[in-house]
Length: 155
Image (cartoon, rainbow, N blue to C red; front, side):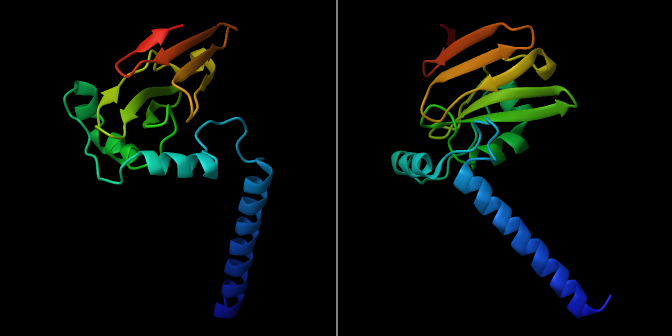
């Protein structure tokens, strides 16, 4: 292909992608109920509360040592749970994944009461402004856990 045609194709792709992103963000159409996306006002609030220092992963647990690479990368991502934590999903297969709660001020890792068999749940819900973790099971049951700074407690 000629360089000019390639340039035109790339330019169209970039503009189409940017327009779609802008539309999704303006209309909140891109979230689909996914709590991982943090609205800009909440991002700003949390960035002010958490010191900008670099926090390293606390390797005191076997889980943290086994998944050090992915957890360290997740620790650098924005807060998405309870004002100072990052809820991460560590994949271990097609319908398998471990949830881990990372304290963005200490690097400590907490394991919520979520099975690694993700097919058990219709959703695992949480929010940046709450310490509640809601497990909605495929069979219709719902459990709500509150993180108290040390562990998850069934409500």
